[in-house]
Image 1 (cartoon, rainbow, N blue to C red):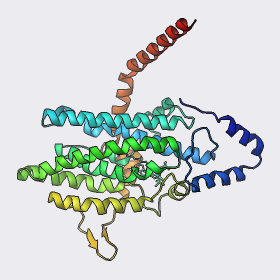
Image 2 (image 1 turned 60 degrees about the horizontal axis):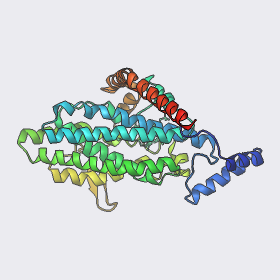
Image 3 (image 1 turned 180 degrees about the vertical axis):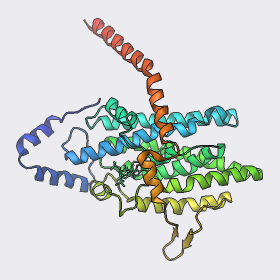
Image 4 (image 1 turned 30 degrees about the vertical axis):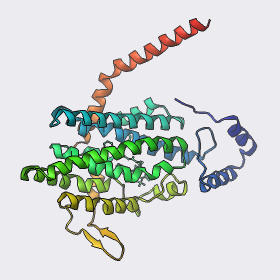
Length: 333
Ligand code: FAQ
């Protein structure tokens, strides 16, 4: 873990002003309003810390569970080149999970604790990763739509008020943007291919469109955390604003592919300069969040199995680290 303590400045603040949390909170909010970054050792309200741990850990879990739907196609990718690209992408997602767990650890929680919550089924991860990938086109659709939605949500997180999260997002977004393009390129190839290939791409779009819109979270009216997270500049845009941006950005891309977005209510609103889209089936989203999506059980089982089978690697890493530390100590003595 990086740090759990306050630096001396923070301690002084606490000693001097322990009676006046209100003033500390005001000063904290003023720093946020002035676009200053909040760093791990500085004072922060407990609710801010808890909100960040919740969001960053859910985000980290999403990256790690998100390796599974695509990992499913590594052995079956249609060429050696596609296989190597997919391996690199899935590995990037694992790396994103690792940076994000590190960012969460700066808030005084351990990675083991967070992973324990995921494996016990107590922690949330993105709804999107509970859907299956029955064809190669699903890999294209994930890159294009899921990474596309992730970028839309995550670019603003590069300006999040919490320094370690914001900095982790810079690299993550660069990689996600490559992922999005590789997914779109798969879809382009398929949609310019034979009629069955184009149909495969269309079916994948049909499967991933609505779950991708759900990725942005409940509507603003139902989003319990948004208002406070926006005051704290953890979130810069609401769930509905980001969803709308995604639709506006993605529909022309579908048109370029010659594929139909599976929404009969979709239409361009010239006056508003936005696409209007049909109602989202929030009951499906709620079912997925409750653990009843098509692959929830399979995903958690896969993570538990990987955790158990990887125990020897963790043990070996710890043994190696303590041997190295002992060597260092005897060299220094
Ligand atoms: N799935 O009040 P809000 C990726 C929960 S990474 C599951 O609106 P908030 C990369 C929410 O946690 C994808 N749960 O909450 C990749 C809360 O539950 P709680 C992940 C959801 O936090 C690509 C409750 O509903 N990205 O794709 C979902 O203000 C390809 C109320 O919601 C991030 O995590 C959902 N879709 O806004 C990897 C980005 N939506 O905690 C592999 C960072 C909401 O009260 C392959 N996170 N919930 O029990 C965020 O921006 C925010 O946390 C939101 C939700 C926007 C997701």
